[in-house]
Image 1 (tube, rainbow, N blue to C red):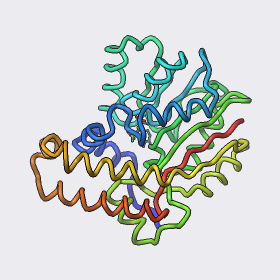
Image 2 (cartoon, rainbow, N blue to C red):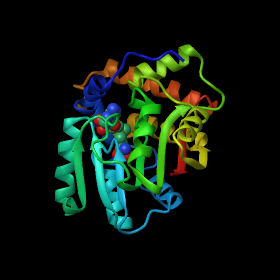
Image 3 (tube, protein in one colour):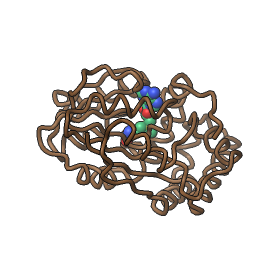
Image 4 (cartoon, protein in one colour):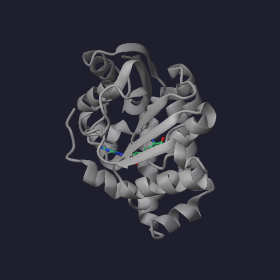
Length: 265
Ligand SMILES: C[S@@+](CC[C@H](N)C(=O)[O-])C[C@H]1O[C@@H](n2cnc3c(N)ncnc32)[C@H](O)[C@@H]1O
């Protein structure tokens, strides 16, 4: 699939600005599909235990790490490339009195600033679709895992039915993704970097129903709030609704999806 010329600078444009606020409005502080429930499922599948060191790659507002600290008593570490997200993550961890249990760093996940063999778990939720080189990202994640450690992540992916070039380009342009991996693509990358794949799941039907839920929330409940965030621009609001409906349709057809992957070093 053709890759778009979108890098961290463009992603920072999203998460430093109104688009990031819109995603928080419809998804909450855990900016991923399914929020608390989906984090709980992945944490259980990853076998996360008290006291473990967990690195969240693309930690955003820190919602994923605060969830893991509160529910699994882990030691959290977060890396995100957007200053607004980094600042907010620290502020919110302080407000919830878990700042001493989480260390946040600002930087690109393609250059992980921790040493080899540091973490019990490397974690990611619905964000690696923004990263320009998934192979390098998984290689870096594998490197900082301890021997026997677990890689656990979910991501927006090309579905099993496959996207046409035009469909992929339209989704990637709207979402500001350089490209998306497929489930099979991630499985190959995971194995290439010496990890043993424990599970690879396609979560298409749930993904489609959540996009429908976001469309309903925007059109039937949060319209005023969403419009305020985008400067009361009704044309832009309608355009976004159209793109989200297009994505929901692709998801229902199994062309666009979300995957969850668990692997061990
Ligand atoms: C959808 S949000 C992540 C949500 C988060 N995992 C959660 O569940 O709350 C995407 C985040 O990825 C970050 N990001 C995207 N590409 C990045 C990169 N190359 N390096 C670091 N952070 C990146 C963005 O700054 C943004 O905060």
